[in-house]
Image: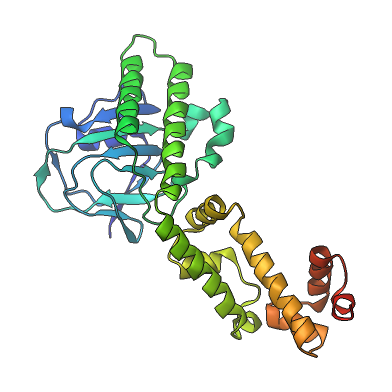
Length: 296
C-alpha cells in the first residue's frame, strides 16, 4: 500500500482540516471538524499520537496488519510507525480525539528519559487498549486542558508536558488493568507458551535454530515481543526469558540424569553453539558443573 510521510503535526492538521496552534503539540476534537474524506494512503508518523477512537468507518491498517479496535478504544502510534484508515473515497463525520506531540517537545524534560516505560507505543501488531468510562472522561478533560493552554497568548510547554504525562499514566493504568481483565485468555496463553517450550526442546529445532528465544515464542503465539513480554511478566511475575531459562535448565537436568549423553551432545541438543557456554551457564544456574550434578 502507498505511503506518505507526515513528519509533523502541522502536516496532519492540514490533512484533516484542523487548526495548528503549536508545531510540536496539538489536540484535535474530530466532532468539531467537517466530514473528512477517506482517500489518504497509509502515513508514516513523525510524532507520537494517542487516539481515543470514535465510530469505526473503515479498517485501520497498521503496518502490514489490521489494527483491531472498537469505539472508545485507545490507539497509539510512535515516530516511524506506518498506519492509516482504509480509503473508501467517502466523507465521514469522524468522532473521537487525538493528542499529538513531537519528540522535540520532550527534549530536556523528565518525560524524555522515561518514554520507554510506556511500552504500548512500541507495539508492532494490533493491540488497542480499552479505558473505562471514567478514564475516557478524564482523558477528554485533559485533552481539553491542553487545548485550552494552547489557546492562551503564551502557552506553557512545561504545563503541557505535565498534562501529557498524566495522559500517559492513565493509559498505563488502563494497560495494566487490561492484562488482569481476561484471566481465561491469560491462562490459555500461558498453556500455549508452556507447550511451545516443551515442543521446541522435544524437536531438533535447537540443533538448527539455537537456543529458544523470546522472539521465537512471540512470533509463534502471534504477539509482538513487547506485548508478549509484558503479558507474561504481569500475569506470572517472571519475564518470558526467565521462563525459558527455567525450562532449558529443567531439560538440561533431565538429560544429565536420564541419559548417558556427553556434555557436548547435551549442549548442542539444547541449542548452545559451544559446550563451554553451556557449562558456564549451567554452573550459574545450578552452582555446580554438569558433571558434578550428574554424579551427585
